[in-house]
Image (cartoon, rainbow, N blue to C red):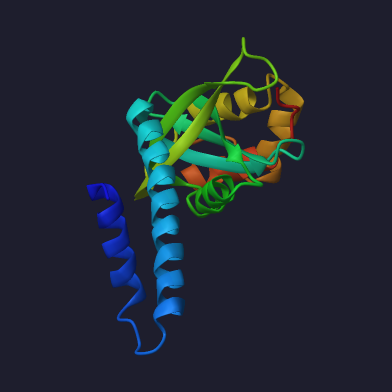
Length: 199
């Protein structure tokens, strides 16, 4: 028996607990199942850590989270420290990892985050890459005011240059015509924009 298999078996036996007298066969089955689970879990965690190692890290504030109906991926819009918007995607929402990331991101709108992002090839077109978020570390709500000019530029950029849609979203969110806005107000304006088609 190699050392890894022995370690997995011992860890599984500890997790299952002592073998009750007379239940050796059932206990052995539980240990075996737990060892296989630990092995596959270690493989999944190893893949996750490889993605984290390869990821680019940056600080940004999360503004919106939507789900793309066709792919079920989460579509995140973040505002980086330069004040520019970046569009990120999660793994597919019909996977455990993708669904968990979407749910977590929804709780972090308006928060300053450490973003771990990979550029990954699109399955439908290997020549194109998408920015995929693989981890978000929460640094709490972003309480810094957003200058009026920068906020309006962000809304216009998110509206893909459609001035009327940007103006309508700004007004519907109740943002002031002049003066700084909060991150929450900016997020509210972006949430009121029509959903654009995504590549």
